[in-house]
Length: 155
Image 1 (tube, rainbow, N blue to C red):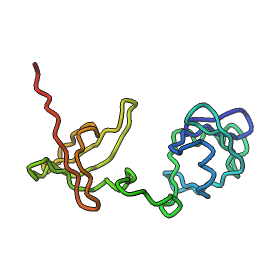
Image 2: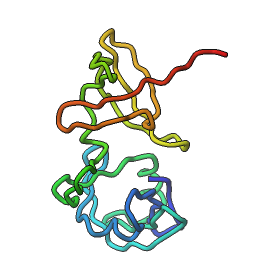
Image 3: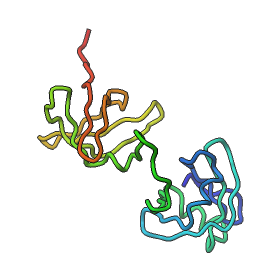
Image 4: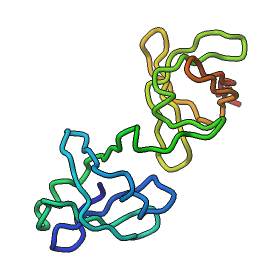
């Protein structure tokens, strides 16, 4: 959640839905600390955001306390992905290999810092590497991802 909106307990929420108001279709949401929140009212805000009033969040102080919290939707509330589609969560834990079937590690997480999706890969040695998702050649659920490792040679 981005932060409070106004003085009556509304919260600005960054959405990852096709339209911000679609957030209301998922039913109760859960925060990253396990709190269950019911949407009392919802409207579109800035692009990619919704302004939400959660039941039990009655003032600005309570709304501010939610700032920085992540919201989660139960997997069963999401539509099934189409053929050749997947959710980011489906990729976490998959083996990562190059085109020669050499093991490069496992997907630890996916991030988007503003310039596109990035995979965080934990290598067999335990180190962490970040690679742009654009190097993915093939996603073979539920087992592996094949990538063309980026060439970072200095020139």
